[in-house]
Length: 302
Image: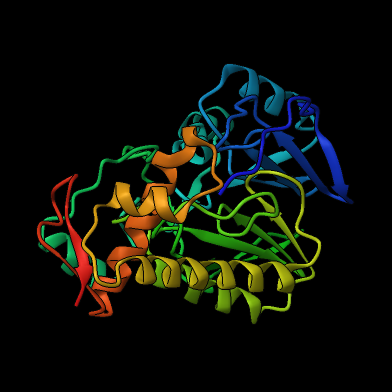
């Protein structure tokens, strides 16, 4: 879950390494931390990774830092949440550059989650860019190549089922899948706990030395951070399972008893993670529910 928000975030472009800049959008919040990170990679042929929210200020700042002797040739989107993808079609039209992503918000959904949806689970579409459709749908492990750079797209469902991380040599642009300042919110049916953990394990195999996340500062110890995230998810699963021993409970009741040290304003966000774990436990046949479509559904152990 998110840590406290830093109030003095810097909106100017930051040079991260030769040929790579980060520009943070002016959309700070408990969910976006200091704002959404937009990355500009290349020298003459540029990639923009995660254009960000539809902000006139961010658009102006972004266009201003593109060198006059350079051309944006690709716009890559890690996933279709509004704070990452909403500006993509606008920027694409201005720059005449195509957008790339792993399809729309529900592309990449697991068969298990599709079956849960047939039981009545419905999305509230909160924060999802339901209108975003990329010009080009990338495939897992697909290479995106120019004369200057080579990017490999890795499909990493979990936070969102169409989430992609983009690899550039030994660095990885991780979107909202791996961040230093917070764990990821997993909100079903677009989010999936088992997919999240599996994607973490796949990312770990890449051997990348640094992660550039969608929010916050770079992750300098990727393997350690991934291990922490997997451990955290396993811990939450055990806590939820143990709370249900010899009792029935709603998501709200479970959340209040599992997230004891959380800011009360973030309980609704925490409840999404609890719901994700409960659905994962239903898939594993460890938990049952009376009516998955109800906001007051009653969960119990099988």
